[in-house]
Amino acid sequence: MAKRIDVSGLHVYYGDFMAVEDVSMTIEPRSVTAFIGSSGCGKSTFLRALNRMHEVTPGARADGKVLLDDLDIYGPDVDPVMVRGEIGMVFQKANPFPTMSIYDNVIAGAKLNNSRMSKSEADDLVEESLRGANLWEEVKDRLNKPGSGLSGGQQQRLCIARATAVKPSVLLMDEPCSALDPISTLAIEDLIHKMKEDYTIVIVTHNMQQAARVSDRTAFFNLSAPGKPGKLIEMGETNQMFTRPDKQETENYITGRFG
Ligand SMILES: Nc1ncnc2c1ncn2[C@@H]1O[C@H](COP(=O)(O)OP(=O)(O)OP(=O)(O)O)[C@@H](O)[C@H]1O
Figure (cartoon, helix red, strand yellow):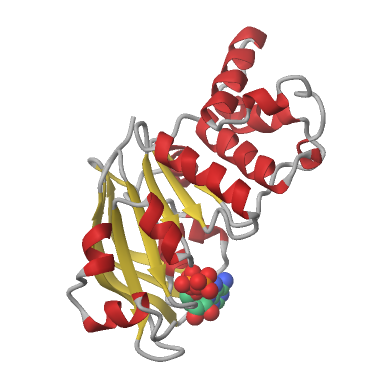
C-alpha cells in the first residue's frame, strides 16, 4: 500500500561535509515525484536518506525528520533493515545477483523476511512480481537461467521485480534509465506509470523530458557553488514547474541555461 513521506529539516553529511541542507517536503502516495538538478547538488544523497541507505556509507549521517505515514524512520527503536523493506530502492546500474537464477533473484529479499515460504507461495510471488515488472512473458521459460544473462533493460526490470517482491510501500529510483537504450527506457517509464497506482514513487533523473513524461510532481535541487550544500529550491506540479516555475533559478535550469 502506498504511503506518504513527510520530510522536515533534513540535513545530510559525509563526515564534516554538509551535502544536503535543510530540506523539507511532502511526497504524495500513488504518484511519481521527480528529483532534478545539476550534478553534485545532493539528489542521490537525499534520496538515500529517505530509506537510511546512506548509513551503509561510513561517516554519512542525517539530521532531521522523515515520516512514513506515522512512522518516524529515524526513531530510536526503528530497524533500518525494516525501513528498507518498506521503502525499496532501484539503482542506476541494474545489479541482479550475478550467480543467481532469475527466479532466485526475485525471491531473494522476500525469503530473508519469510524463510518458511512454501514452494507454491514462492512460485506465485515470483510470477506476480515479474508480471508487475512487465517481464514475465520474456522470462517465464528461463526462470532458472542466471539473471546476468538478460539484457540491460530486462535486468533493470528484474531489479524492480526484486524490489517489489518484498511488498514495499515506496520505491526510490536513482536514475534507473541512465544506462538503458531508448526502447528499454520507454519500457521502464511505462512500468513507472503503471506502478504508481500501487506505490509512492520517487525518481532521480537528469533527463528533463523523462521528468516531464513520468512525474506528477517535480523537486528542483541546486547548490550555490561547488563544495556548498545542495538545497531544495522549489517543488510543485510537474506541469507548472516546467511551464511557470516560481523561481528564476528553476527556469534557468529547465531551459538549459545552466546545469
Ligand atoms: N560517499 C561520499 N563521500 C563523500 N562525499 C560524497 C559521497 N557521495 C556523494 N558525496 C558528495 O555529496 C555531494 C552530493 O552528491 P550526490 O551524489 O548526492 O549528488 P547528485 O545530485 O546525485 O549528483 P549526480 O547528479 O551527479 O548523481 C557531492 O558534493 C558529492 O561529491
